[in-house]
Length: 331
Figure 1 (tube, rainbow, N blue to C red):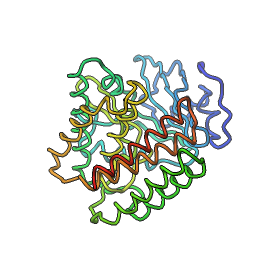
Figure 2 (cartoon, rainbow, N blue to C red; figure 1 turned 90 degrees about the vertical axis):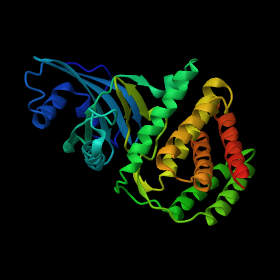
Figure 3 (cartoon, rainbow, N blue to C red; figure 1 turned 135 degrees about the vertical axis):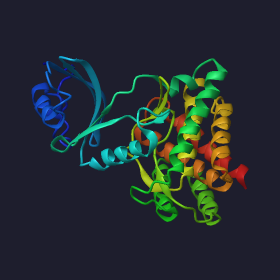
């Protein structure tokens, strides 16, 4: 048995040493998945992503007498068995792998390792479809993503920590303060956006909350054979469903900015996404969506200045500008 990566030394995720040690991991897997690990000959572990202090995502390849099987594993810094339970509930509610709109099959949660195991979904990432030169492919991708989200929101599932408008505004204020601390050109724009968000919030009517994905974007969607699959459920919560819609649209704008040179380059795809979603739900999202999109812009700009990846200044400033435009058009 072998591992493809060096053991990661992250003291906040103590189980990583066992996850990256195939013999240790094998013992845990045999206990949790006896039928699926019968005749286990080899385990290979490959690092995919490591968010220090939060979680580590790996690919686990199991070679047994019956063949090879790949899983995605997420080792958490704290107990996230709730994510596994949610995925089981969503699967049973009509999103299992046999459905056209689905999620990865939840396989197991290894409590001792705080390790979530799920199906590895093979397919084309939605990001690639949105960056395709084929306009028909981009529009089809937008429609599939919208239909997936509309079906999920139609469940009206109620699980997760509640995030009402008041608590959302507290988060928004924190993002604004972080950006303001960076000085110009961020401080003035962040302050103005926060002021307009407060004003917009005062005109919003109470709305029914449901479980939302919490981080729904092109990054989370895979177009598999006969399936549209949404991954990464760590950020689920109970909130206004328009937050998922807004986050997806803003994610397309930022993808357009970073990959196509213009924040508006994927506007047609975003329009198809929104029109498809609204046609199914028949909701007037105008005011709520403008507020949510502007809030997402502020949040993304805060992430930009925090991570300071290449091109972060331009990305943060243009994202703030977009948030201001959204609210200006809505008034």
